[in-house]
Image 1: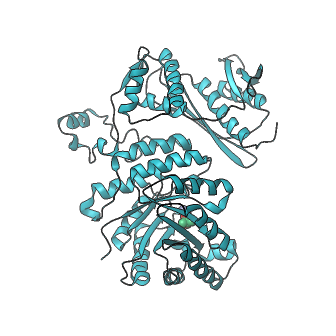
Image 2: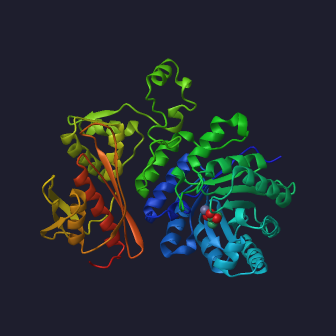
Image 3: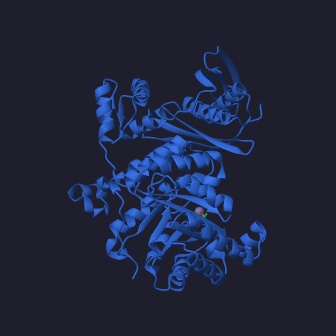
Amino acid sequence: MPQDKLIIFDTTLRDGEQAPGIALTPDEKLTIARQLARLQVDVIEAGFAAASDGDFYGVSQIAKLVKGPVIASLARCTPDDIDRAYDAVRHAERHRIHVFQSTSPIHMERMLRKTPAEVMQSIIESVRRARRYTDDVEFSPQDATRSDPDFMIATCQAAVREGATTINIPDTVGFATPQDYVGLLSRVYDEVLGGRDDVIVSTHCHNDLGLAVANSLTAIHAGARQIEGAINGIGERAGNTSTEEVIMAVTTRQDHFGVEVGANTAEIVPTSRLVSRLTGYPIQFNKAVVGRNAFAHESGIHQHGVLRDRETYEIMDPESVGATSQIVLGKHSGRAGFADALAKLGIVLEDDQFNEAFVAFKEMADRKVEINEQELRAIIRHGSRRVPDAIRMVSMRVRGGTDVEPTATVVVTRGEGSETEEFTGTGGGMVDATFAALKRASGLDPHLLDYRVVPVTSGADAMAEVNVVIQIDGMSRSGRAISTDVVEGSGHAFVEALNRVLNAGAGTPA
Ligand code: KIV
Ligand code: ZN
């Protein structure tokens, strides 16, 4: 019988960070890793150490400073990757090297240009090498669900012979159905482990068909005792299994899954919001567990039921996942009231972040009578995003209407202490005109990859969160801002994205 404990392996900082437009700094990664440790996940895949010097630094910082979870780094089947992975994780209290190699015909023939025999040899040598460094080695046959099952299983058997302690079966392209996946994992459990209880079978599912969480959970019935996921389900393409959904599914339906997780569920919502804030990826309103509607009841019948007994329509207690509510501030609220509200929300800010957030709150309170919890969180999310200003929008004015060509004029400074300058642009609407003016101001001509305005609350004076993703020279960067004025917020979000491009030294001047 497999153990009763389900290992939660979180890859927000590796696979999650591979999502388009996400580029976390090493400090941001460290902040997320510390929060994942508070959430008490078992393993943090901190990155792919060999991918770049920045990745290496990010992984080693986390290995040195984050206590509790096992710290893992991904590595291809090459000596350099494995050496680099070990070098990055070796400072951790407990560390893991996660070795992967593709085993599907399409990956081996088209991508790797290796024969199955060569692939097998590379796996044997790599797991052997990793095992010389640590006794915690994970092996993943990439694209396992499109591989010849016999060959894929043979590679896992070889990895176990060489000392791999976790065998992870990736549904790399999100192709499997729950039946496929449970069938494959049952074979792995029987044929690779063959009764051993010192090797763990793990899942790693992508969400291309929206089945990632279902596939991962079903595999528990086939003996899987590790699930890999990312917070908010972020990751390549449609993303990964959502870590928080897995934690709450096995906690809420312990009767069904019969396994336990060690996670501190009250840290789920704070973790989800932190990841959303630092990655710039908004959380879908109706996202299970962490969406803003996950515990909202709209219809009268539902509200009536919940008032009588919460469990009439709620299978999870909002407090058990760290969701709280009912905080309202106004323009008369001072620093103490503001600090008290943050404390109630479990938000801890450094002094300078607090000051910045307080200024942003006061500005917003001048425009809005009441500021509630969601708006407060939006202010904090925005206030503590620190992107150095290569360009700063000091003010703006727009002209538009049914008979006027939309025109925007922005007043900017370009660099610390520089004089203000004015730039004008026109466009199909006022937002378009603002972006045109800002392109002129920055000297860049990026492609607008994504533009979204999300109201934080309802009402004509609603605060909206604007998300912009731009692309230039193959690099995509996001920007985000909040405002009660959509055009102004769009301008600030665009400037933030431009600054990220300028700070990265990319971009061909227009
Ligand atoms: O999806 C995948 O195959 C992966 C592996 C590297 C584990 O992320
Ligand atoms: Zn993956």
